[in-house]
Amino acid sequence: MTTIFADVRIFDGDRILDGLYDVVVDGSVIAAVEAAGTAPQKGATIIRGRGAVLLPGLIDAHVHLRGTGDLEELARWGVTTALDMGSWPTALIEELRRADSVGVRSTGAGAVGPGSLQAMIPGRPADSIVTKPEDGRRFVATRVAEGMDYIKVIVDPPGRGGPDQATVAAIVQAAHDTGRMVIAHASNTGAVATAQAAGVEVLTHAPLDAALDEAAVADVVRSHRTSVPTLVMMEGVAANAPVPGLDYRHARDSVAAMHRAGVPIVLGTDANQAPGVPANVPYGTSAHRELELLVQAGLTPAEALHAATGAAADRFGLPDRGRIAPGLRADLLLVDGDPMADITATRAILAVRLAGRADT
Image 1 (tube, rainbow, N blue to C red):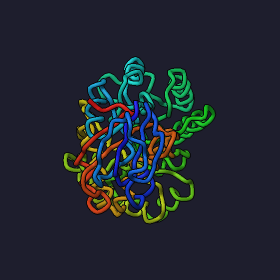
Image 2: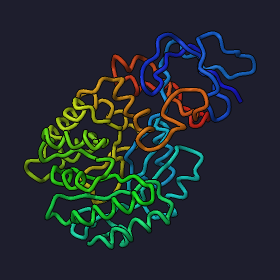
Image 3: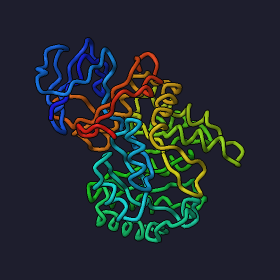
Image 4: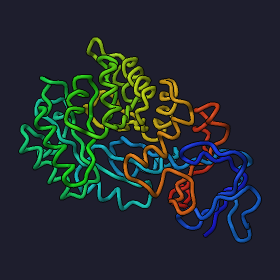
């Protein structure tokens, strides 16, 4: 079946294109991007954009999923790919991947030290608790055997119950030996230092105890790391925090400093409804709040949208999505208004397509 988004402006995952276009969807893929009024319309379903903006479907690079209902809520808000950063059991991940819905990639349960607050989350698998390098290598082998796409490690500040430097380094090396990327939960400057010394590729969260200093930012740049700051989560944690000194402004200022230095920023929300965590972040709508917070931290609207589309696809190895171009998966989000001028326009959703299918 052919669908044409006619007379639309296009943000292609990297930039806004000049002029109006017809985007032709054939089944699950984008078949053509042509000048407005030139695509043959006979037999096609026509969605008339009238100057509305067509975006790639959004990629949320940090969620925690409970079931297919979460995917439905993500899709309703134009999030068409979800990167699960710590759900279990394996059977749940397999069910989510099979769902005819939002695309899912996962780390499975992340590695955590026995004294970490994360170890106290109800139901956490015992095999995710690591105390020494040997445990870290075993943990990676288990996640790989389960078919997980990435490896995650929860890094706490030194002395706070998380895995020590040698164990984090062993996890990173074992993951790299299997060709997998490592994402480090690091919401404190001390945790960031540990994660960076171990050689992780992605830092998720942004520190609340203090803004990253010039040396830490330079290390991120030098090592070609990516930040998934989850500002919407940090905003919630800071609001709920019983610990003096935790301040959302530190997270915001860290993102601003990394962005100025050229660090790739990728959108993630930490959407969850888990018991025992500092803040529950809603699915779907939080991606739009994250876009707004990224803009407040100094990204332009186009840069924030790139963080949620092309940049996420590049960092997480998703070459079939995140952009609007012939041959790519037809994950699409049509919005009213002009998000280049006002990022909140992404909330004015006119249509969503998941691999060419209308979100129902």
